[in-house]
Image 1: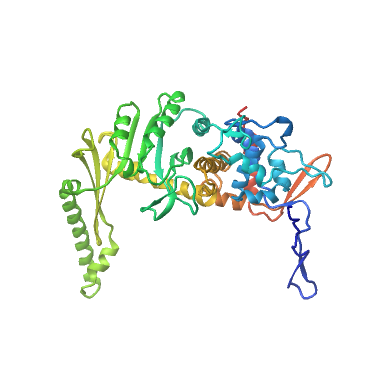
Image 2: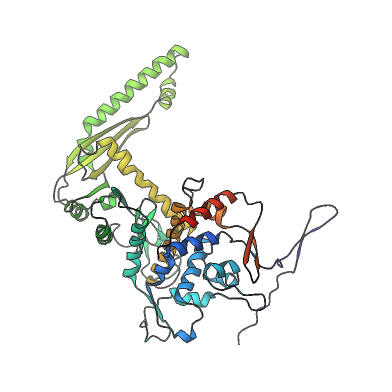
Amino acid sequence: MTPVFRDRTPKQFKFSGEKSRPIVVNFQGGTVTSDAGLSLIAEIDRKLEITSKFAQCFQDYRQPNRIDHSIESLIKQRIYGLIMGYEDLNDHEELRHDPMFTLAVLKTIGIEDEPTILAGKSTLNRLEHCPEDIEQGADSRYHKIRHSSEEIESLFVKIFLESYAKEPRQIILDLDVTDDLVHGNQEQVFFNTYYGGYCYAPFYIFCGKHLLAAKLRPSNVDPAFGALEELQRVIKQIRQQWKNVEILVRGDSAYSRDDIMTWCESLSGIDYVFGLARNSRLIQMTTTTQNRALLEFEQKLSTVVSFLETVFKPDEQLPEIASDLIDNSIWYKSLDYQTRESWSRSRRVVSKVEYGAKGTNIRFVVTSLTTNKVPPSQLYTQKYCKRGEMENRFKEQQLELFSDRTSTHTFAGNQLRLWFSSVAYVLIQALRQKCLAKTELQNATVGTIRTKLLKLGALITVSIRRILIAITSSCPYKHIFATAHRRLKMLSNTA
């Protein structure tokens, strides 16, 4: 027998305040929401139909006469919850009664005696539960919702292509892997010595702030495992629409593999720049550059020490003080290099030799770009180093959209959760790109946008004529909200 839940929350809470009047707090405010900014997300989603297209990647084998919540409404509810900061399905036991979420998923909001209730945690769990031991589809008794992985993967690239009004001259694709620590007995979880824990190792492809691929992988595989296949799939889809765009593939030393570089070299309009692990041969090839960097630094140091000796009393600490006042000497040089066994041909390698008070720091990158097209210093600083921005995308995904909440048992279920977080990111990026450009939030992270623009307190009033969402008058970002709304109205429907 199911136990009856009794709400034991006190009816009111008293706080100290004015001398003449006490401060009383209760939970009897009625239809009040803390998520009024969700109206912006829902509106841009209606314009671009992102969750609607995502829902088309699912097949529903449930009996239509027994369905209260369609696939699309379930997906909207789940993804909107992630955007608003609700990572757990259990949160929806209360959110299902929130009128703001009801309006966002296009349900008709009910009146007090006939409220509209959204899906609870158990119904939403049927959406992402992917058991491995039973057949999915129409013949399954327990799991009647399935998804197409191929269609979902293709959707991210399609949304990226649609975000451009015309074909760009060049795009840069960033490849990288991050860790996703887990704390259970999930499928395909292994201990990774580099990350120091049991984890997954999801693989991502970004173009600037646009997400093109999010592939969950076990952590016992090579860092470049599956990278070439994903890269081929993404570029093939891009080339179908953009015939002449120049593509630069960028990544760290994990991707300086002969098969990846050879494939890029075999196609016109595709170049690469990858980090390259240093070795004794490469260090030896930079001996002359090291000497020049050392000589330049010593000359700058000697000049500053001589000046300080004219101002201060000569002291043994003057060289140390002078070294803090001058910049390190940095030299770049192009090399022609081929490994003894792993590479099929020689390639251009650019070395960066930096000498300072703490010694020498040498880095290498390998590229298909010629010296005439991109000189060594520009290649390293402008083409390669900017790949570090991708780390901020990982932070947004994991810390603010909960892509690391891979706590279901099955690997397929966790991959689906990763895609839910990815679609949530795509929605936020669409809002950032199309509605927040040239505002103070144009480069804000997901967490900042959520805090300042989406988590807004409001009173909801329902009448026959209209539904009024009255946001607090003291909202400090009402001008940005107004700008976003104005640009939303100018945005045409993709339909």
